[in-house]
Length: 280
Ligand code: A2P
Image 1 (spheres, rainbow, N blue to C red):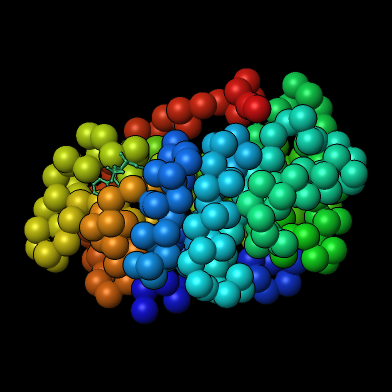
Image 2 (cartoon, rainbow, N blue to C red):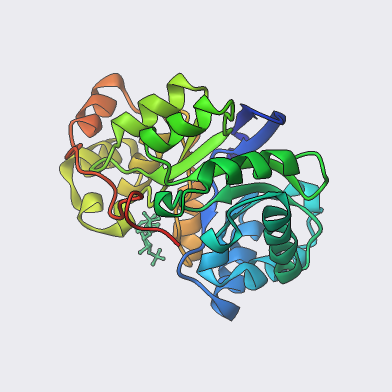
């Protein structure tokens, strides 16, 4: 089954947590729409859901998981916390407890620093506090999001290896410097907006030609390009058919030429939001 393709997370305070390569992105769904989208996804075989405090939908995601009939250990759940909770252990622990409260659940699989917020100057301490939370039963693994190579190197210098760094990646924004920095440090890359937010990317010949040849959709080709490089993807859709398509990317393969052609689409442009100046 497609949802049984995993990456293994390793890093400070984490040993061998397995994460499904395809997860459902949930921003900007909220309320009943979000619960419905997550419930549908779980029914279709998704076993990995990605949310954040800032999406204001942790309650809706928690409800779908609670009502799914699945065991808690069958679903991999990620959330992320905001800058107000950066700092020492009690601040970060409280962020986890509050997220769990909103979800009505008893533990998180992965808890991420959502943005480094370098102006606040607390992300190294925050990562240290977060790593310490692993093993308390509140979270199984920790990680970061939107960390540029400079931010990553700063925490690595403090002896903190995040098992995962979730950043914006799609064929037009391949972010090779991020991927290289992550890989060199043994950090798994997860891609948000892996479909380029459903824009012009999905109309390109680089995707539609292999799609036609393989009897797939351009979105499946884009997602296959990611997972064939062992990158976790978090495509968002509220539509059942598209959710199913996005999970069904493990029984075909792109050729080296297909991969290189998609690689050549990279504009070299950075992420839409710059983590040195943007954050919450
Ligand atoms: P929809 O929710 O109507 O399916 P990203 O994950 O890169 O941010 O992209 C999300 C956008 O891509 C949404 O607008 C979503 O629309 C669209 N999308 C998701 N999956 C597919 C797909 N398989 N084919 C076409 N568009 C998709």
